[in-house]
Amino acid sequence: MAWIALLTLMAMFTVSSRAKVPKKPQVSLLPLLMLLVIAIYIVLIFFFPKTWKLVSSDYTSFFCMASVGLMQACIASGMIPTNTGYAKIFEATDKEIFIMDDDWNIRYSSGGAMPPGTELLKKTEDGVLQTDGHTLLKGCRLHPGHVVWMEDISALASVLAELEQNRDELSYKNEPEMETRKTELAMSKAQEKNRLYDASWQATAKQNKLLHETLDAYFSESEKSRKKELLATAAVLCAYIKRKGNLIFVGDGDRVTAQELKLCFNESLGNAELLKADCCMDYALSDETALPTQSAMCLYDSYESAIEAALPDISFVFLRIREDGENIRAIYSIVSSRDLSAAVFPKEVNVARDDDTWIVSLSVPKGGGRL
Image (tube, rainbow, N blue to C red; front, top):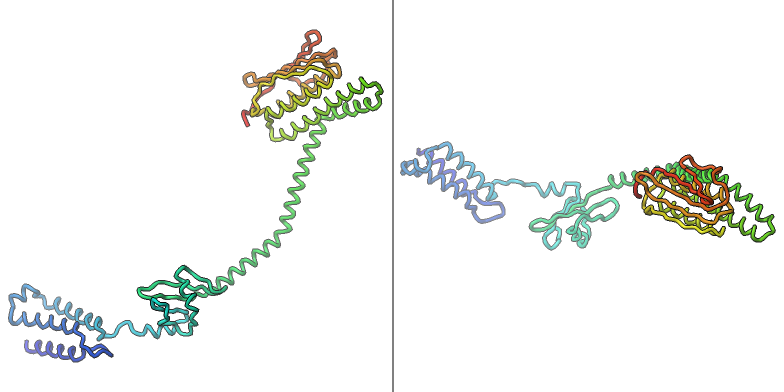
């Protein structure tokens, strides 16, 4: 026991004599406090065994904890140096880093770092700042103070420049291909237009021939009444040629609106009135109704065939077009002394005669719906 007491006293003397932090004259009390706790524990062992048993009767646990506490007290008081050498490491780093106080005064900087202006340092509070094409200035708030560092983005800038160069080269190489594509599209559009023009010309070849014959007769005729009649006939043929071409262009997508078909009949009837014929129409299809192109063509071609067969002796024309279930029902009543039974009609057409009135009727599929 005497040996334990002697060792304890020697430890207290050693610590108390050396319990001074370098460059600080005052004695550090924290290690002495831990020694005092150890001394009290030993006193309890010898002089107050009952109290000692209540506090802790496990020698090993207590002295292990006491040793750890004593070491931690020495570290906390600075007697045992820890975490040293940071300043040297900070100076040796190749990163440009600056540590500043709250007033942005530089307190520490890495070795070889060239500090930027104070205004630039303050701007890092708002986010990343690019000082040039190769350097980013970043910052972070400390408590207290600030830290700012420079980040070299030369490699990234080089990669971006290379990518931009590659993009420009690819764009330059693709220009001929793009021009070729544009040319192909233009040629495709021109070919499509030519196809539609050819289709329109073929569909109205008969009427174009009749028109030329009528105009030739007009220019060779001297009688005014006959010239007027020939001119009206030419107007009727022109209306059909024009409107049939419109139907071909509009109906290239397999659908034609009922409104477009109505415009065809309106123009044709208007020109038929030049022959001093009374014309009227009962058109019961809504403008939004979508008709199959073939059905619309059949309705208009049937009317034109009847009118051409009756030219120029037409005194009355009445059209009735309406829906009949899943079909479109059309009736054309034409008063003329001409024989319409020999005219060429689509197969869907029925022709009947009541005195001087010719009744042309047909039914075509409605199909579609509304556009």
